[in-house]
Length: 438
Ligand code: HSE
Image (cartoon, rainbow, N blue to C red):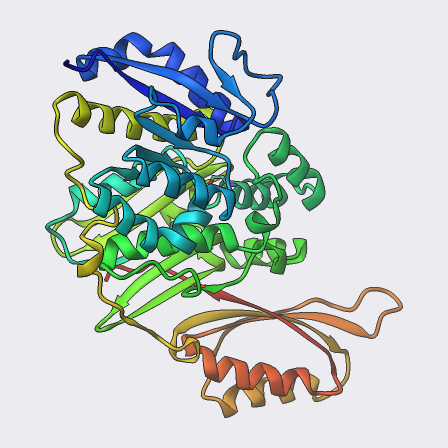
């Protein structure tokens, strides 16, 4: 008997889940027409109702595993998040011969190698466009459109919450907690926003991008990771005074037979395109030998942009199914057996310009000691700001911008500076990227 329809099962009814219900409903006819077969949401698994989502027309189960065992479900959409129950759910679906679409970057980064191998074994699709940069089609771009390119680097703003917070703090002078609460209310932040703030979410996404770009296995331990919590309001003000904005970037670079994977706040000259990507927008800049430089910009979080990416994957899988074609795309851009480990460039070898902010005693010789300790490590100073002490204070804020220097030299210099009696022992260190043409 030929197939009459393609059934979609949705697990998880949070912000993105409710967006998926909205888009599948709004575009039901169009999606079915693209497939040439009815594409229907047939079963929702959610532990609780979402007051913003009317599910009265759908079969709803409280046990999400009922969706996996439902014979009417051909494509399982996993939107519950996390890496434990979500893993069991996705594993169960792949083993049951069902195609899976997920937005779960933590799951893909941590256990994606295993799941990709399982999808290959079972001849089913595992798609995850929504896992990176929300509505931007970056997975398809790297996996399919740029297949005939050697990719040199992938860099960008890949956490919408972090970009929203930094933008509002810098442009409107708003308080961190206040903007974070708004990002949560708007559905940008993770249920627990810790990963948005400490850089883990961006690191998960960078791991996925690096795998697709360089053909390496997913390695969630790979990136050096620093979050936006290392940026104080005065850093945003000093950066502006010096002609920079601060953005939280993920940067993956191929350096011969090694890779450099980093996630950290970064000063960027105000006249660079990436410096103008504000609010919840994300951007990914790819450098490769064929196309040269390619920049994608779009909403990086939020219900409908992320649901758009999920539904695009669902439609893609359904189109293959409707034509009786199994999944034709390797999950990680190439078969798991073809992925090759590359060593990571040690952090101390990575060069950049640096922004250093410290509090220094307003006394003779203090600045001379600091500049001497930088000079001892061959680090040249490009610019320097010293604020006069506030009335009654004996301390001054000092900001130094250095020329390019390896991380190890900066570590040695700042450790020595922090040990001076004239400083309070804490130094804010931020990298500067100018994104000059390769
Ligand atoms: N919390 C994530 C972000 C959601 O803000 O980017 C999209 O992955």
